[in-house]
Length: 300
Image (cartoon, rainbow, N blue to C red; front, side, top):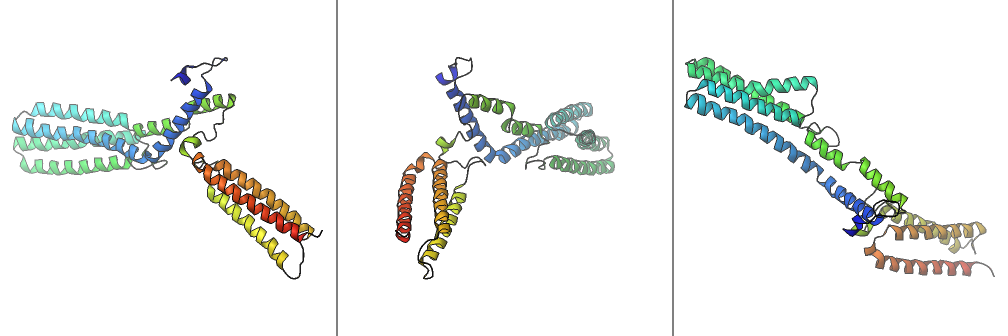
């Protein structure tokens, strides 16, 4: 906690504290993105489940208050109040256009109200008309569920961003002004923020700027093929020694190899330090062998 309370001479928070904050944020962002889809649809399921609970309470009120207690007015008040609550709940959770909002309000009221009409007609003794209205209520409820599923479809980045809770959570974890502010502060303090989590994760492949090991391996294989071409020409009976052009090319290949080896050590984490030393020793011996063969083939 002391790192976060220290203040530099210029009045800014200690650079080490900023660095730790940035590392923590980047690691959390990396893990959160792996579970972003699960988190998004968990939020969608909670919103849809709450809506269905409220609409189920409307049907329960019809069964207990109107049919059981024979109180039609109490049942209608309960239906209107709870359906309004379900509408407001979804209005808060969804970002809709004008026409989508009109469709949502119409469908969310239609199913419980037509169910109330069916129950009222059955209460009045109009059995056939009540059954027709009950069938209409089922159809409208199916249309409402289709509307909900349409809003829950992925829209951008594989996420159902019409739901406000999903959109807000994705905005928080995306690039924002706070992240850029912290990175600028760290840069002013002379702290590298290109890949701050390397020493914790033991790899530099967390950002797209880091060279993958596959690319380094491919570069090494390319250099090896070029060396084989030169040595094949040297061992050919028609050529007794390396030409000046081949010697120049060999020197350039040696420089390229040293650069690739340096990049490899920079991209390796702390856990690979032992392997890096072994690679350096083997590379040094290989360079010595190349130099020895070059000396033998060069005329005295």
